[in-house]
Amino acid sequence: MHIYFIHLVALTLSFSALSSAPKESSFHKLKTAKTKIAVNNIPLAKINGRVISLADVVKELDMRMYLHNPEEYKNVNNRYGFYKESWKRQLDELIQLELLKKEAEEKKVKITDADIRQELVNRYGGDIINKLHEANLTYDDVKISVKNDILSQQMNWYGFVNKIFYKVGPQTLKNAYDEYVSANPGNEIWKYQFMTIRVKNKETADEIGFKIKALDPANFTSLHSFKESLQSLFAGKEDFRISLTDELTVEDKAIAQNHKAILTTIPQDSLSSPVFLQQNNEYLVRVFSLKDHIKSEPMPFSQMTDKLRGELVGKMAEKERGTFFQRLKDKYGYSDEQIYIPLPEGFAPFSLKEE
Image (cartoon, rainbow, N blue to C red; front, side, top):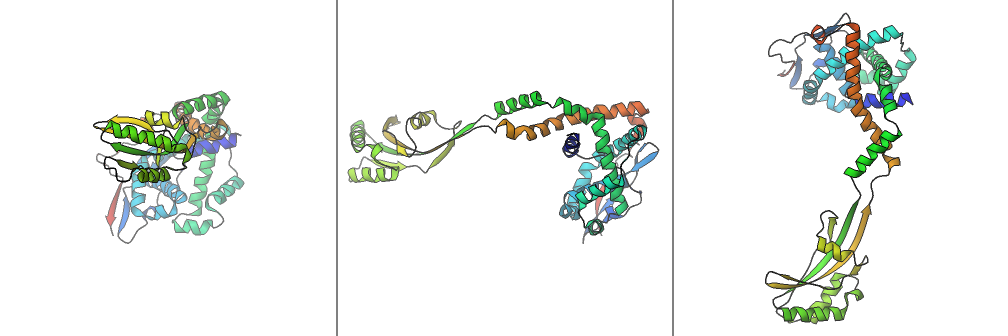
């Protein structure tokens, strides 16, 4: 079960903690026909005897982006935007990885070659060499990254994910479901149509109403046929206008209450008795036809548990993660001032340049 949560949290968090390969790397300089990304490579942090540079960060971003979407990775503009949005977050991941390495060393946690090989196949398939070549990645780069991912997942599990496992129990899920139902109650859809007859004086309206009742809408299956019968019956009468709406599809929360009051009294595929109204200087006679009444209930709890669990894990993971890594910093005697190297004033990590 805890393997499920390891992967769930790994997917929920934005990035897994990664390590870098050698600092001098050219794969982040891939070019298109017109532009390339220039990386202003400088040291960004120092921890656990290692200096983390911007090139290290970019290498990890490239591996992540290529693995997620190779076509997007090949687009220089998309990659440039991804770099700008994600480099600080990825730097934090690399710093956290160094803390996890120290913790793993203390706890004697080992990652086997078999675990690494299996994960490489899971991520890149059997054609891994060609795929790495396409992205200008080396096998060693990716192998190290995968090893660090597995290490991070295991250490995160023992550090804070297992706490979430016990917190997201049946009652927590039930409470989350109750909140979901409260915010997303079942809905009703009304599909209907109505015919309106407009006349100028009440006497004519009463006459029409009488004849409509004589025709009896219940004898008709549709408003179209009922309308045709009325037009034949009142042929030549000048003070007489008749119209028919298109079929309406309206949610229960949006339907006019006077319409709903009528529709609730008639069976599906039947016509209502005439309804008499006065609007401005006109007299109206309306007949409604109910086409369909669809009731939707909230998704049952049994089908919502995985989704709810994922959302709860995501919310709890960020909080627990921050607490866990602060505890590691305190344990190994690091402060942010000691770890992060101040950036030059006006530092621009990336730029697009014409070839």
